Image (cartoon, rainbow, N blue to C red; front, side):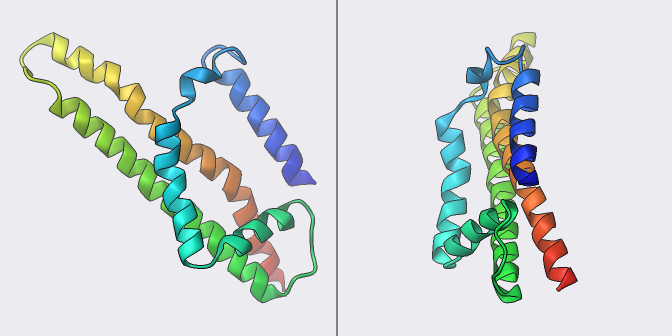
Length: 152
């Protein structure tokens, strides 16, 4: 229940404060970057057979109780795995974006080159936006699971 309030409040807060309010969230939408971060997270969950445990973590966040402590530990590990994987691929996406931006420049001696790098920087930083958005959504679940496991 409280996690639902957190989600709604966080989404409203983010939408109110990005680029002039609710009318400009389209500036932050990039499906290729989102897939670059989300696909490895899904793949690691599927390959480690942790997808069910990850889903169970969200059920726990919304108030479902009754599983064993081992199930909660498994869910905690699945959430931590997604947090770490998204961190790695979000950072990798930023590095790739900056590398492509710098590599595309032909002449570093002009001020125009610096201008192009500054124009490409926000595009590369969208990877960090998605990474931090995933962390904002998953960290409370991670803390709730950890608290529950430690108290049992």
